[in-house]
Length: 122
Image 1: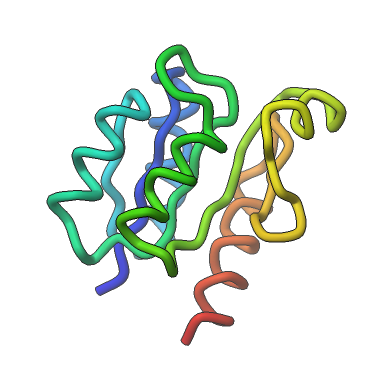
Image 2: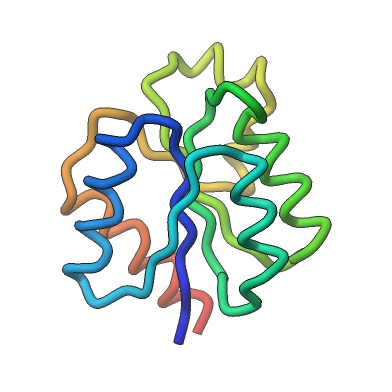
């Protein structure tokens, strides 16, 4: 079964995203930081999609994605952020390679994007 990893240092956002994905029948694990996410990725080979906040206290999302792809080159990434597009470019979000979801977003938007990415993978 495909597993999704949700990483956000805001507990409310993290819980909301996890609940929406679980209600959609997805297997989800979560992490409160980039460091914790890397540890989870190292232990769980079933993770195929990373949903990460862009701006976190310990590791910014793009750096997390680079390190995660060092372990899993085929890992899909969705970045979530309330930052402006200019700030996202500065921190290294590659909108050509990775998906992006602007905060705040509706659960329906999240599920549509996740399902499209996973459908394309199959």
